Length: 280
Length: 310
Image (cartoon, rainbow over all chains, first blue to last red; front, side):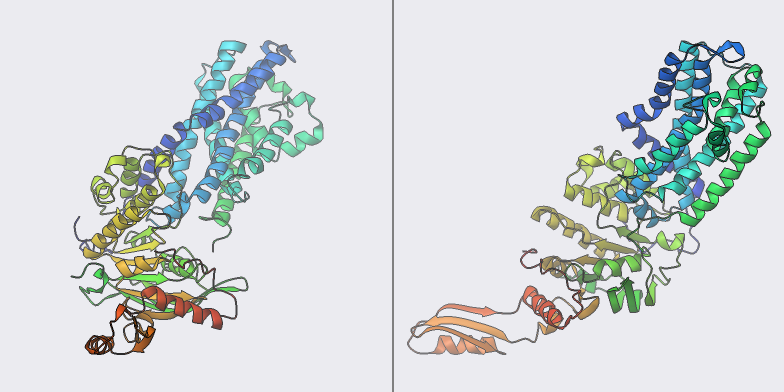
């Protein structure tokens, strides 16, 4: 080894860029994720499994559309739950774990930035979300006769919807990680609001079975808009009538999700902690 | 150079750490109660003290991991409370406990962390220096406690730090692993890395540190070299022996003269002759004992270090 003190003067040194470190973090996050096989299977397969169960139970035609089955409505709505599962829950639990096992404390002692750490999480979420959605759509196409759209406009809608949903849920997951007192309690703390929202937002139970009060509450949160948006991508426009407003409401969807992105970012900036509560 | 006294070399008389009146409180509990500390470049400086003495709070303030409640601090010329990324690139921090990156291999992890720094050491070389070459391809969760600790050191030095913080680095090591670890620290010190370590092993402080401070109740109660701390060099020696009259014990400032007198003495045979100088442990326990009597706030931790370092 060479002398430690001999390096160029520190004020002129170029540090590795946050983007480069962030992508490197993404690579190690993915490696660690895929090496825990049980977690991988659970994360990927859970939304598809629920879609399969609901789809097998409710297989009659949907209201007002003889060419659409209720099982298809469940499958495409479940994409919203898939994103909540990979972005909100996995990120929230993952950060609580990183705080507890020393990952964050060690990073904080290096020149790596918090933004690089978040970039790594976003890489992980992107890959696991795309994987989860692919599995859901495969279940829909192979078992329930779902036809993927050919109209590019629908895939464009899918693109912005996916991006806004992932960003909003990831930021909310980061923010919610501060609520968990420990990595052990994190799954419980994060699953409760997530599951509750699936029920009131027309994901686990279809809209027409929900009381008006629940629909109103759900419209303040992102999940309802995500589910509605994904239905608009994969179901024929005749299904629009089944939505609470009788239309797909793309403009409102984009606004609500964007608002949650901004709000989530603000909460992250205000509450993110590198270490657990006992420090400081 | 005398092995084990590496920190006393001073290439440049440049201060790396200087703290004055450092204070840290947790609610009503005072963890650090006005510490003054100066560490020069290429020194190995040890903070010694029982659990709860304030060692970890002090080192974490210097690392920038904790906010201080009072005093002034300069580490590598900057205030750790506000210093940025460039400053962090010049530090190496070895945390007390970490179980992160369990599913990565040793080589992947060291390479990854090298990527954070502008002028990292060669990862494979670092792995070799830390004695982990045989484990380079192993998942981190399969490492033993000592190997895991050496990986922590590898991650601490891969960025080529000017200053290395080691917080109780050898807790839980077997004796051979500790010797290997000490050799690694000496090697780093030889290269001019400034090292601040906390430990509650007296032999570790004696083997590595050029200077050391004993902490109790959040204060430095003694500071010096391992030979001189607590007046160790000037304390009287005790000579014990046995002769026809029985056992004898005498304290003297000049043990050589006393031994000469005993051997010159006509008649009786002197057996079991011993000269005792106070060991670092004797001095340390005296210091801690005094602090314990004085410490009215009950900040002194368990006296669990007796014999632990042996």
